[in-house]
Image 1 (tube, one colour):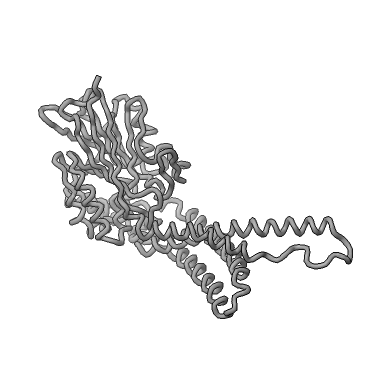
Image 2 (cartoon, one colour):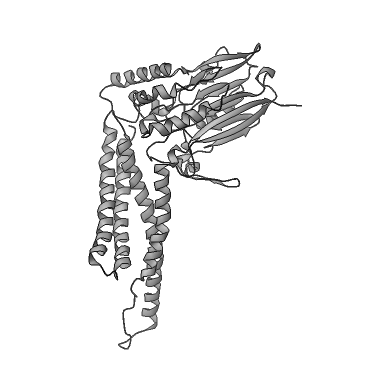
Length: 422
């Protein structure tokens, strides 16, 4: 795993910050329960919270060792991380309300101290924390806590179909109305509910598209992760075939292997699994799709991403492609389109990508869209058009690290190609 020491240090700092929040929340719960008639319930509440929250933090830190093996993060490790994140965000909300209340107490005490002096002043300068502040803090913190629990229980399998119709002058007449179903970022090593996954597969198949494409990250790290689901994902069929590419996680770069040979064998095995799934894996190459005597070119590259592995060779993938052909490119990382594809002298009409997951968290409404991933990726979800050269970024079928989705739901994309009518 690249820069392992720096990442470990970062996570340890976050864990230490979480423990500081625990102390502050603990003080707020003491205020909240101070007048409870049952000492047993009072102790159970405040100490129960502390044991659970601190325990989750230590489980999270212990789970970091998963990166030091060829196994990587299992659903167990993802759940410890997910509960850690859930508790951390909840504590932040609780602490913010408490902080506002304590700031008011501080200002009041300072003003009182500056405007009153001498022995006549009675009582403490700084008033005691009021119970209703802690009550507001609990109510406020309940919202993110409930939302993140929903994300972990149901949100990560709440599949949504996103439909796009794109019009082209250059589209061959025979392909007018041609449909493509795309899924991306399966991350099979994270799944914990086979029945729910099957519902997503059934929904994708129900679109009855002409072509099926998968745009990378079949696994988190190791080829064996998909083996349990091969019989499920090989159900995805389309009349013009099923095609796939590799994503950055498919190369096994994020965990420790016992040897370079073991890592290389893992990639060979993963490629074989694409065959077993019935997917034609495109490794910097192209195929021709023909309909009624007319053709379009489907091109697939290995992963190329800004800040990630850069193996994709677009020039090699375009070898033999007619310069006037209608071209669809499968490229896992949208930064490839931003950095290379849109500036390439050979026009690529449509690029299909994934990779970002939309951070698995955000807000998407008719008039507003936000996700923390937008601070890292310029193009992180949906359709982007630059001079009639299009990029579509799929939000991902699976999930990684955080075992949930909130606001950015798992996606099945259906794209319809249409001939522009003059």
